[in-house]
Image (cartoon, rainbow, N blue to C red; front, side, top):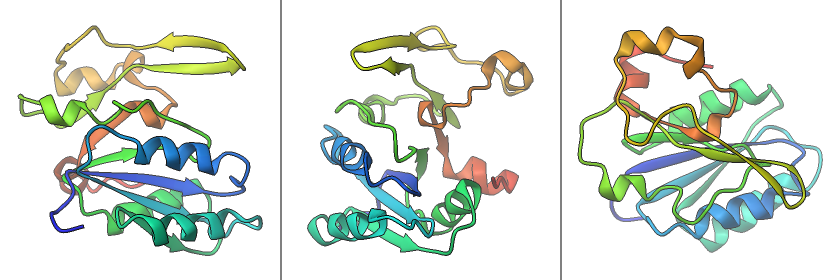
Length: 172
């Protein structure tokens, strides 16, 4: 990777052998290509770590970090430590994304610190539920973020500017 990535996608990995290929393949098929993927193997006892290493050998945008099991929060924090992008995204290893997931960074024209995108929850095979808490292109004030309506347990639906994380000293 020659240029500094615009987006760092952090993927904590634990016992993800069954769905890790789908997750990483969906990230590698992005139409926006200025990104890196940090696969954080959280001491997984299955083949997840080996699968991560396979991807790193095939694509220079993929970096792998192996660590002792410490939970998803410690894996995300390790990813934050090594992320090089201006923007941070978190994708869980059982998630998969559409090919335009990162496309917002090609068209972003306003200075914002956080972006929320809609998502679809797959409840059963072939059954999806659309989910979004914001209207299209809505901007909110920082004080409004304290409203519980803006919190979601789906980390994949948010992008954070690295400077926001650093300035506030945010950690998981």
